[in-house]
Amino acid sequence: MAYRIDNAIVKKDRTGKITLIDPENIFKDEDAFIAIKSDDLITIQLLINGILKNDFQNWRELGNIPENEPLKSLFVRLGYSKEDISKLLKEF
Image 1 (cartoon, rainbow, N blue to C red):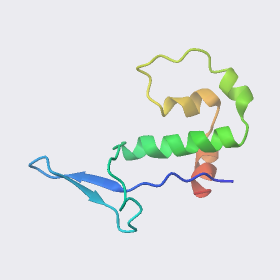
Image 2: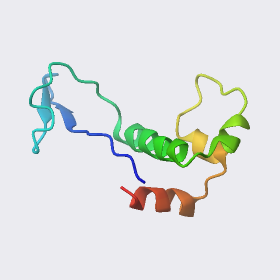
Image 3: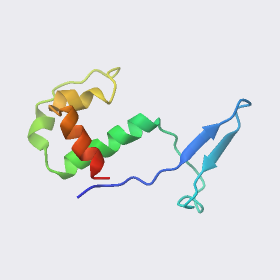
Image 4: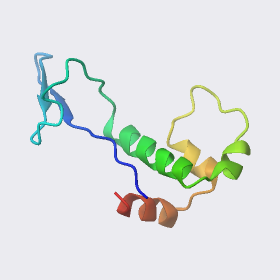
């Protein structure tokens, strides 16, 4: 089972004005938004899918993770290969 996070694109122009690009009107009734870099969003979605697959043994083995370590490095620490990540991405 793949888990999907509803998302849209937030675009900032040269003057700093931010525009929400939401062609499916998913957020038409929302008052506030959070912007996340696209590669971090994909990483979060993949991590949620890993949790949903009950991969808790690998999570327990992670130990302490430095705060400045990028989120993407968790995949390497969890033992995912490029093929594993590709398979998870195809589940979206």
